[in-house]
Amino acid sequence: MCGRYTLFTEEETDELRRIVEELQKKNGEVKTGEIFPTNVAPVLIAQDGKPVPMAYTWGFARPGRTGVVINARAETVAEKPMFRACMQNTRCVVPSTGFYEWTKDARKQKYLFRLPKQKALYMAGLWTMGEDGGRFTIVTTAANASVQEVHHRMPVILEEDEIEDWLCNPTAAAEILQLIPPRLEKTAVNGEQMALW
Image 1: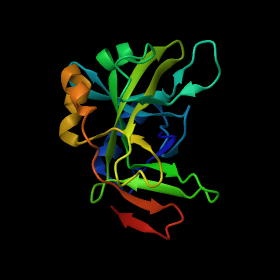
Image 2: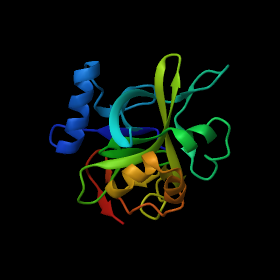
Image 3: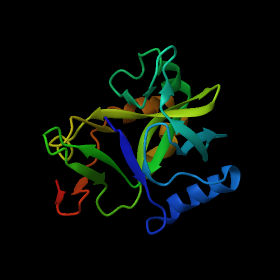
């Protein structure tokens, strides 16, 4: 599960800063820092075969129920009624600098996971348009060795050269879901530990 992620732009990357600045011109202030479910945050969607930044709410509405659906499982995303059409037609990319997971023990240690030697981390997502505007969810998969000690799920992470395929090519997108995610580095949020697996 991915229940929080980060989007820092000041010291991080020109690419992420450009995305946020473009959205700020269109929409005003855009959330950066720690992103929580139901926050409005940047995503990239396909328009005319090109990635275009939009500001959408994190979490699909649950008709007739409270709460939101923040994750979609890669293993079932093409079959579940809530996600099937989105997987075929409305995929998005969630730009970030990393995501958080917590240990399940009594300490509940919070860890930040990032790509080693890279400032941007792109997560596969799906989007839908509701009465209240655009909404997105993050696609998750089984955790690889670098994450599984902390949590059994992790986001599907896109390499930069996979972004256009994820957005514009349903066949390639389905293949991306089958890939083993890249290894990540983990840092305890209190900054005392760092491990590269």
